Length: 385
Image 1 (tube, one colour):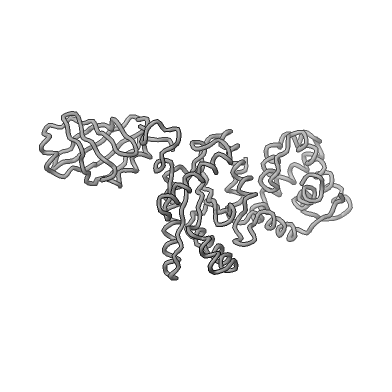
Image 2: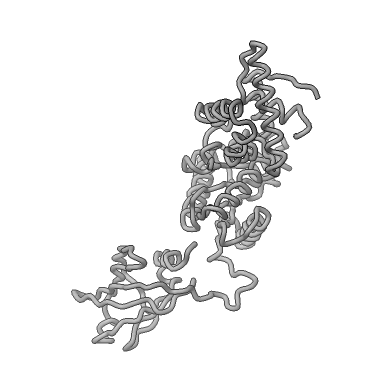
């Protein structure tokens, strides 16, 4: 199965021009001459994925077989007439000029590439547009539902963009959008993809990325935007919300709605803020900070020269309680205590950072994350997010 990021990591036209895609189509054509419809049926997964990703069309299998048989026949007829035409061009001609998306009109491959750009590119920022965003996200959802996995989306918005648009004019506003998108792209990983969602809102798709990874990407964007525009004495910042499939929604619409709620929450908190699920209490939470399910874990605490093993018994967004047998409570009250290591599900995480205790008893110690911000990462380790 073709993966979305393999087709649009750089330019979608370059990816569609890859030799392996053309060789697969030629292979299917050769088989079709020998086996007929069976050749199409045996390669239906490849043809379905190609049709969905390149043309943004979902077609049932019965019609898909008919369409690709027509494409193969058209290409074979051209070859019999002595015309050398790329099969991808014939396929594109069928979808664009046929009744699917009439007379046949064979296009040059270069014109085909330009047309693809027009379909999927935002004309102001030259980023990918909403049409491709929806196509790719729906594709990724179907792929993950079939094979497993996850991905994240980050919905970002330029703070106070309306002010700049209204006071400086729409031309300057458009230039600002273009510059903004370039700065965002410069702060992305190679696998991340930027789309313009609409107005001054953009979406970043982070394939195979869970919440903590997406949060890192979002914070890097936020810092990069602030730093870039501050160097030019322009007060531009960005707010955002992070949503993760399949944990925050089952459909494209649900994911965007979830991310939009978190974006709104970021704006309400003063802007220039990134919000994920752990920063914003959900409407269906029964408590402000719900407890997270605990996996098997082991914790090593250091005080002076002694090391004591324990386990995290209770953890939420607000803090945690470590169950540990303390031989001398007063010693832990008067000396600096370190969280050394956490072992979880076969992994070992080294911290070696001092912790402020809010509770010390014979059966353990309590830690408040508001006084130990660096420990909030532990929340992510105890979830599947």
